Length: 574
Image (cartoon, rainbow, N blue to C red; front, side, top):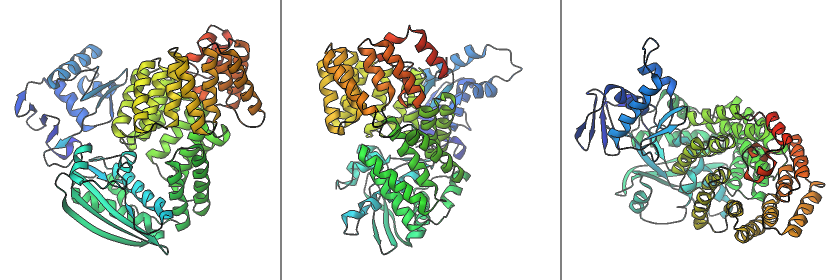
């Protein structure tokens, strides 16, 4: 997706072309007048596409310490001049995003004069083993290859979620290329048998279906990671992109892995991608198997952190077994390999287990620095920013996550969820309906819709959506809570009390997030009981309590000094 101007003197984006040597900006060949400071700002943004250039960095570069000038006024004026030249808007940016009080980010794809920026789709590798049980292996190799290629800054690689939508869909490649806006497509097959793996792949010019390269690789399963790296290097060479020294080192890294550990890891990822409660439990078992077989293999630790963190958030697991375990696994993964995935998981766990918002933010920023195209890092960072009330930044980050992974249901649902937290309920409903258009049975979509209808007073619709979520989830307590709140808000007190009793009884046998009971109690105006359950949630280290500062369902508790005291103890940023 992105490339820095250091690799070329001419950089193209949209209809524009920036010539660094001539210091000229042109639009469709017509020169556009641009003053020196806006020009330098644009050059700095293009040097760091997709990443935040802070106000402090711009100040050091353009307004040295010995310059007597109103920096804020000067920077705002220069940014406005630059946007004017690009025909851009701060409210609806196509090129330059503002991150309030932090800096700016260039968000458009780049193409330099050598054509080195390449957009790439890796179609799901076809399983040739003849055994449907081996499907996890082909999907896992596809996933790993996409992850490796996505770390190359000069490539825009279509996300795994979007790529998987084309599994077993045999459509003309030019049609797919146009649909996704990619120039190159990788397709291939995989066979796994008797401790050996064989991958055949070919690279084609997407718009014309012209073959560019093809090769086959066969290895012992122990050397499958080296096979993946070799295949990724071959693709990068053929699409002729420039690698940074760090990227060269990453792709050159050759390690061996215990075959049983690798297979367990791929099986875990296969179930992880299903995202259901039962699947999350099953994937954790496989990741534990992989770690036991090969404790030096980093990927299962990062994957276990993902799995445990999400299980904790959705209350499939207690805080200790969920985000507590996620934190430990992520720290171990980072010890072995400094990866974006591990830092993002550590950020998620830190947010929901320690409620350490500043540390969580640093982890998400590190993840994005390591891999600017890792959509999950942007998605989870959006949660962190939303929990702190920095909604403008949260929505900017979440929109970027959707841009990176446009067909991901969970990324889009996160946008809806943070819209709900930010009291943008109609927007949350619009976003959720887009999700349910892709999958009418998507549980989290029904949940987000139920909450938004509830807050808008559409209680009949809220109750129906909550009932759908309960049915589809197999009676998950997370969604039962929403039904109880909707009943209480609708004045159906008897039904709400029945659900409250159900949750209280369940809490004697298993973990139940105290926030769930507090939400229903608050809706029933049982404020003392609501505050008692919030104290229990605090003692539990409950995941959901990270959002209570802005949760609209706790509005009637905000004037109570006990609620204010709880927020102070949680160290919410001011």
